[in-house]
Amino acid sequence: MYRQDHFFRKYTSSEDKLLEMRPSDYIRRHFWATFQDDIVGPMTYPYFGEDNYMWASDFPHGDSTWPNSRKVIEQNFEGVPKAVTQKIVHSNVVKLYKMDVPLSQAEVSSDL
Image (cartoon, rainbow, N blue to C red; front, side, top):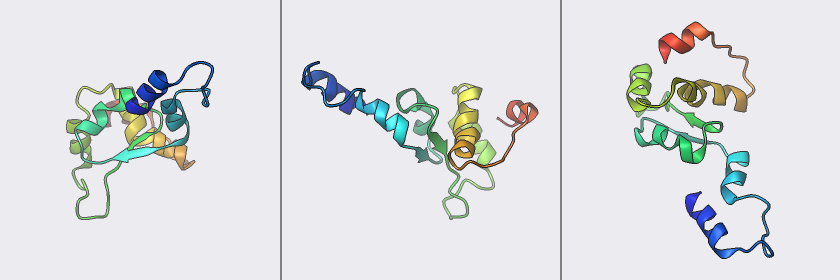
């Protein structure tokens, strides 16, 4: 996304713009991405965005983080604000798949 925006800024003038927004804006609007058991994944939310980015456990595959998913989340998301972590590990998938999975404030603060 960075390189696309770089190219967009560098090689288009206001007269020849074919896009109204930066390429990264279209990606954030139309794409969802996931990552799993990855310390770099959570750190990239400022670039990709926090609203369409999701953590995955890869359950039930052999490479899954289960049954240690909560510990993996805690380790991988160290330094990421709790509100952002909540979106990436829970709220975004609920939004994308239109699931009815409420999460109480107590669960947010104690589990994540």
